[in-house]
Length: 327
Image 1 (cartoon, helix red, strand yellow):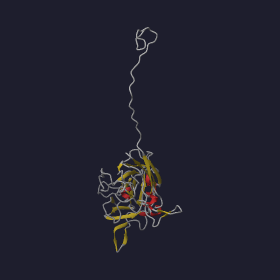
Image 2 (cartoon, one colour):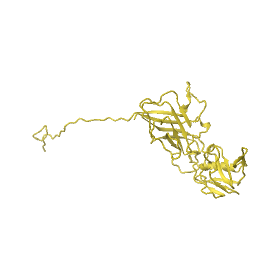
Image 3 (tube, helix red, strand yellow):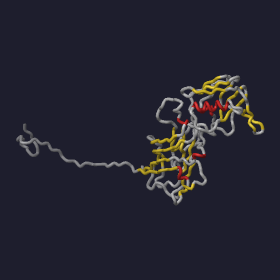
Image 4 (cartoon, rainbow, N blue to C red):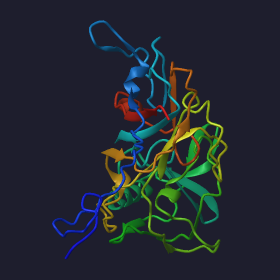
């Protein structure tokens, strides 16, 4: 077989070669935009002393912090910031001073009982409520006389039990009652009725009523809100119920293990440590000509109130990792 090429125009068959003209290639180099960390510790709301300890006087709740130590955070042309990781120690009892009232209308009288603040499984809470309901001062009327509670001996004995998935069944002996949260108790935004999903669908008095599957939770999520970190953000958040905005992250409270519901698997029934590596962060606009000089963060519960954290747990602090990007 013979061929014709530039080197062998006669096609003598010694070598078949095909040659192509050379063209200069254009190469575009791409690089990932530079990132930096802004590492936030809620404990930094206090002054750091020369010996490396914090001056926590007065001690304040980590639900509303302000960090300003006369230093600039994030040197460079920052255009975007977002939360990438969070560590949060959950130390709020599911029954606390915000929601520890259980309310009923018994024999036409509005009464309630108060449960001590603590972490409760459904079975533990049922036993505690049954014990209180059957005590001499268990149920009190909503009204009072001269600031002194009026106690009402109604329907004793009371029986509080839960089934395998936490539903409460309450029985009153010699009494009929209506569940609900229609009666306003000053100073309380929520009730145990909501925590255990014990709200009657009707106003017909009954002697026994079983509630729905409870949440056993004081709040379903925590909103991390910051005015300083979102002050350049033009696209604002919208909530269907509340009016606050400037949310940098919403932490949903669950065990993430998708465990079936049992008496032992309700998230808020025990303290825990939460870690989230955020896969879909909210990207927040920043001014490239400005450093981050101060940081404020407020924590809100699902009732739109600052997250309740017991004073004994105020020295338990959370951590945030924020990414600062040049593009």
